[in-house]
Length: 132
Image (cartoon, rainbow, N blue to C red):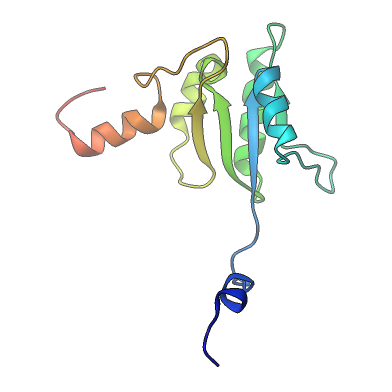
């Protein structure tokens, strides 16, 4: 049987479980991603979204980040860069490929590539002599 687009696309490898994206960010960022359909609640009633506002304690953000890293059903953690700055040492310490941690801008805080932990690591690989 010749593979067609219909039967190739519909086959999902059994060894590749579906994984979620999670978001840690300000209200506008979280609402946007929730409206796109990424919000989930698992059997333990844990969600994959944390809304951070001015009153959110950095310890709460760090605890959530660590919880997301340990969850086997999360493949990508999107975090507003200004929120990542609240727990910078914890974000920078995470070096496993999964879940990938992607720092994203928010409406109020522009993206600064100099702070991005993934870009810092990539620069060290490309130019190990330079410290960044």
